[in-house]
Structures are given as structure tokens and as C-alpha cells.
Length: 464
Image 1: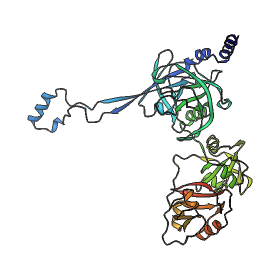
Image 2: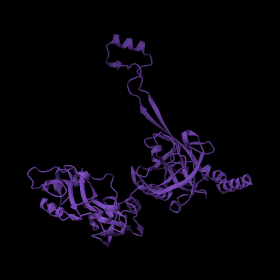
Image 3: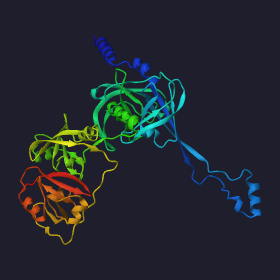
């Protein structure tokens, strides 16, 4: 009896698993293999004997070299570096989408179609920030194309499937589920990656990620690994982000993203308590770029951004994703928490610059007035006007000495600049001393610290 029930249960479990055969049959013709060639000059070592310029030699030496090297001096040979990846056709007239890192630095790019034709491709444009590249091939009309879905409609736990060329094995199919959405990776905060457990390996890069309806919902881009192979963490670029990049590359040859001009950090439980939030949420503004869109729109250091337009900012990583999707010049409404009260701001979004400016590091002035006895165990000195200008700040004190006490316990170092304590700006060493003497007991206290040009908030508690 038990054996019969086990067979029934196994049959039901198998019946619930998806069948990918029709999806693969319909979608795979539009998936392509991409190879590149890059001519790299050989180093002089190992290139064989070098022959001098014969014209400037005496006749006796010129005759010797002509006998020894009848073919004359040889140009240094080149070796060809190759890479291999995947891609997919997005239009019948030959546009192909892949990863930027698959084709970056290539002198020649080749696309191999499902019918075994190999065609040279032109690079229409590339966007290193999103790791996307758009290619164009001339293969006649009526090419097979993929169907585009909406990555915004994906749900965690949903089945997805990848087709690509892992390790050069073309048209390999792997399947799994969506593990998470909206992931920010250390090397890119403007792409809300789709995390999956689909087996992705070298060669899968640039290939499509399909939902069960056979629609592309992502472009496989990265893996986290310690061995170089798949370990259960794969990341795909959402197709909604990719198609926006495609349109900009087609029209302008470049990609422009929105920019707010602020440095933000996560709001944890202690920071939430310090800033008057009922629970951890939002993006805490730790630093504002002078003259940037945030400063012009009225943002202040210590504001917690809770909503941008109609999107809730639950995690700090939600803000760069939301801002990056806006066009420069667009006006965005913003809900913030300031001084324990919710406020509304309207900000004109700027254009993301190529490189962010980095402020210098403040150096304490030995002749500045100092506060040497306070509850935090810190000796601080005032900033000179030159130091304020170098740091692009208008207030604060520099930590000169850290003694045993709360300051040492939270990791403060000499040279750190403290600009705010308990949500109050520090204007002088005397001001710091006064605010420190009034700090509450057994309550989360916030402190804004600038270290090597980067600002962040830290929290601590005092027991007495």
C-alpha cells in the first residue's frame, strides 16, 4: 500500500515539473555563438634573431646578413587572442545583443548562427556600466528573433531557462529558478540584477534567460565563484534595463543615466531609531556633491530618502536603480525624513558623470583649538578654512587623538572628520564638547564621519 502511494506521489511530482522541450525548440534558433579576435603583438623575447637595417652596414657585414637571412628582416609576428560567448538576435534586420565583456577590445567579432553560417559583426555601441553591447550582422531578411518579456513581471521562485555556449558547447540548455531580484553587485550599483540558480559558466555570458512563456527576461552576465565554475549564484541583467540601453545605443551611440549627486548608505535598526523612523527603510544621505542635482533640489546631509516618484525606497540599493532609469533633466518628486518629519521635495535629475570626484583627506592643524575632555574619549581640533575648502565641507572637527572609551569602541581614528553628532551640526571644538555633554543615555546616537573623503553615519550608545 505504501509503495503504491509512493508511486502516485512521484508521478504527481513529475507532472508538476515544467517541460522545456517546446520552448527550446522555438527559441534556440535565435541564440548565437560569438567569438572574437584581438591582434596582440608578441614581446621581443622568443621572437628569434633580430636583423638590423642592412642599408647602414659596411658591405662586408651586409653580405654576411644577406647570406644568413635570404628572406630579409622579418616583422614581429602577432598572436591572436580569442574569446567566446553567447548572444541572441533581437530584430529580423540583424541586431544582436550580448555582454560588453565578451567583445571588449576585439579587433574582429564573429557571429555563428544556428544554421552554421559565420558572419563578421559590426559593433554598434557598448555600455560598460551595464555590461551590454549591441552588434549588427548582415544576414539577409527574416532572421529568427527572440520574443521579449518584462523582467518587472518576474517573481522570485519562478522557473527560468538559459541557452548558451558554456565552455564552447553550443546550444547548451540549463534551467533553475529566480532566487532574488534587484541585486546590487559591488562593481555596479545601477543595474538591479536578477539572481538565479541556473547553471551559468564561462561562455554563457551574453546569452538569454527565458521565462516559461519563451520570452527573454534577462541577459546572463555574471557568476559568483571561488573555483571559476558555477556554484549556484548567477546574475542576469533585466531585459527592461537592456532594451532601454539598446534604444539609446541605436539612437545616440551612448547611454545617459540619471544622477542625484549624493553618497548614500543603508539604514539599519540603530540609525532608524536615531533618525525617528519606525523601522529600517530608505537611503540615508551621507554626503552631497557640491553643485549637484541633490544640493540644488534642497537635499541635506542626514535626510533619509523614503520614496522617489511612486517607488518606495526600501533598501538603499533601490535608489540608484530608480534614479538611473530616469532621463537627465527629468523632474522627480521625493519623500524624505528630516528632523523626524516627512517632507516632499522636487529634484531635477542630472546626468551621471564618467567619474565621481573624490574629496581630499583633512589633516589636523597643530595650532587649532581643541576639546580634550569629553564623554567620547576624543581629542578634536577645528578645521581651518583651507581644510574645509579641500574637503568641500562647511563645518566639522578633526579627531586628533582617540583615548579608551566609546570613540575607540566604534572605530574612530585620528584624521577622521566629525561633521554631525546626534543629528546636530558641529561648528567648532567647543560646539562638539557641548553636544557631547548632552548626549542621551541608552539610546541610539548617530555620528557623521568623513574618512579619506567618504562620508558615512555610524551609531553608538552611552551607558552613562
